[in-house]
Image (cartoon, rainbow, N blue to C red; front, side, top):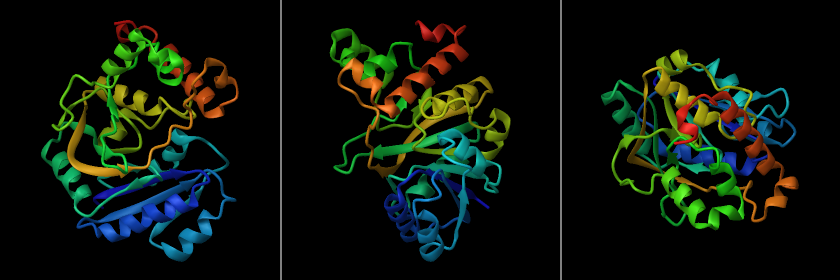
Length: 267
């Protein structure tokens, strides 16, 4: 088995339908399996998948366990040489996965690699970053990111100073679309389940580097990502009413505590 595709969903049956239709139409040239883990078994996804996509292995999670824990359920069953994380709001086109796999096959020291992700209007999404400093979550989720210091910090974090058209090592890849070498995952370990949402991908990439595996951004392959920042807030007090934003801040606190002795927190 060449690739195990893994998607974790939560109340997104229509997005799942479109994603799986795209996978069917891509007509991959390699052997694969697809594991879908649903964090809300009551949303109708099971019936739709069983009727329209019987080739998908569907799993109900024991409740809303979060992104990392949901993926870990699939990791434990994956048989592929590679594991491909796929967000529900992705669209994959014919030939793109083959390009990503070919690059990984040719560079055996890469443990994780991510394709270029575009917005629906074909503008670039910055889905590769440096390791975050402790102020990055605040800058990204509040109006403080509009300040001069905030803008500079965000630009540095999103590597605005590098050419996004060439393949290169990066500190972090966003978990929306990552190809993981199975041998690397075994060496690194699964997602840390203390992160319910956000920072689990940052933590995984960090552990990959610590284990000697490279993390690469690979724009030879391109997907479309219908990304929506549900955690975005404009005023600091909105964190109190935005649950997703609160989860982001909670995960940030856990991440920075976990790596509190690292010099990269305060470069």
